[in-house]
Image 1: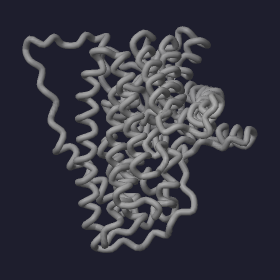
Image 2 (image 1 turned 180 degrees about the vertical axis):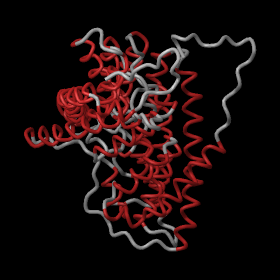
Image 3 (image 1 turned 120 degrees about the horizontal axis):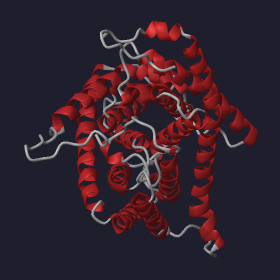
Length: 451
């Protein structure tokens, strides 16, 4: 249902309540529910494909070539190939492989149909070959692009507002189960897109409906195929203790630490990106080799698997917490360093989302700080996840929710500490980030077609 335009003598905005009561809006809700089914099925298939390709490339392929196990150097050729594929996709296919992650998490606009193959190929090459980025940004782009394309296919003269709202609903459906709850995905998109005001419900209601349908599709397909739902979930969690005064002090320390680390990661990734853009294909291969070298160095130095550094960290968050006693202080220090630098290299050149690596780096840092007196394990883990998420994403609300709802009932216990650490990290990150350089008088202003 398009938002009606004001007449020449009527400058008042349309009444959202009137639109909500209209017949056209009911039709839009039905369309959102219908679109949510195929979009969520495609999203499930994408995640299932990534889940199959990762062990195939890192475990099955070396065995098929005659190795008894995965050689320590194996990430080097794989990430070089992954970098080559991503570089070629970004350089030559329409859409430049989708969302450029070094600028933070953004959810604005929908890709055109011709851009979707490039987004898909770049995401698969990034995620399957082991770069340190997550699937959320490609899923949002694919879901929004498929939904908007379906509307254009059915009704070529559909109003742009309807297409935009259906694209948003497709994005909601695509990540409906990725973060563990449709509500978390909805809050992520709402905060990242800056939705607010009286018109919020007009976009939110179709999106929530599509997300609910999508979550049901994920559950059904996961049960039918036996593959699961590919949802962020932690199990067998340690017991959280009641926050103490000392831990509120540690919340400030965690928040400040995350701000410094997050600003450093963003600064380095942007500097690397400027170099990568000069020679896209060979530079992306080099960044892939950097990620591989960091993973190999960590594994050889600590005896831990290289997968601690590779990949987004989504599936490794639970084992990191439940098996934290197996990690020494030195191993955790090296993990934060190597994962953070691999994150920088991936942000600068590959294509994917920044959410899960930020959570993992923060979790490792929080577990590291929990070795000092006065800070419990679960509190350190939760504060690290929340503080680093807001330092990297600059989305404080979703950062609090990610860190607390992820832990279930244990998260409610430590939520006050997480809120303090997130607020400190959010404010400190803003203070540490230099303001954007003002435009000079001779600098041409952007055209209306390319804002």
